[in-house]
Image (cartoon, rainbow, N blue to C red; front, side, top):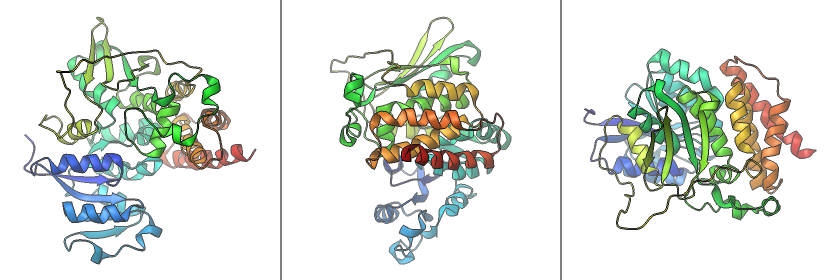
Length: 387
């Protein structure tokens, strides 16, 4: 049974995942409590959240933005902490039971690492932690007897479906992808994609960077790498299928031909709650499937010419080492440049491949080396854009 109240640190509480997590906490009838909240720059929303949920700690991670935030802006029981090092401190607090890491990008690595080092349960919504850290992160979790419960809808689906059979009987895992807004575009149409078009996702409402990743399918490439480490799979045991309805979130195929899938409407509150309350299942505020209506579920093989990011993800999953950190950093930098109007949509993936191929690969890097690779890839992406 769950304890009377499970203390949750929501790191990235003002983002889409963080806001959904707070809806789950609000609906939990006291079983879940927001013990700490953090934001990077959206301090206005962070203050409103603090007044609603009354956490013990409030973290403003961006020093420049935090300068305008005062302790007096918060409820008296909330302690204001400032700077990225505060995220690490909060993640390791003894009174925190579960750390939900919903910080976008590589910035979430240090706080996730601190939570695992402290033996916490980590509800992982920051895929970049495993994309970058891979075997280092899973080894740390095993050493400290910490648990990593996936929040991404695809990996949550796999996590649930794997409970239906023995690991040795798994033939492969199939991650579903909506295909984004451009799944039927020709190469000529893709060359003319605008920023607004790339941000118009057909089924999910996400942040700008993740929405662009969905349009390029780089999000699926990164999820391939994450699944490789999270479930101890080889790259050859991971597949991708385009499923435009986003109702089946992923599938596990067993050696006898049975396929177990997890289905639900596209609402992140369900996998968030499952991660926060695992192994319990409880009534949730997530949207429920309407069985009184007709539904159509379609599957299409992804087009490698239209979505070359998938092969990059498979390559990085096969070799491991520093490849994931470089690919992730290069993509973050390329997407930022696309959103700034500096490069075209179709330049994002080729730029990432160029940076990945130029880096000095290392099979067994340290954490410091991975962080160094992250910084190098961002600088190299700037050079690629300038030339």
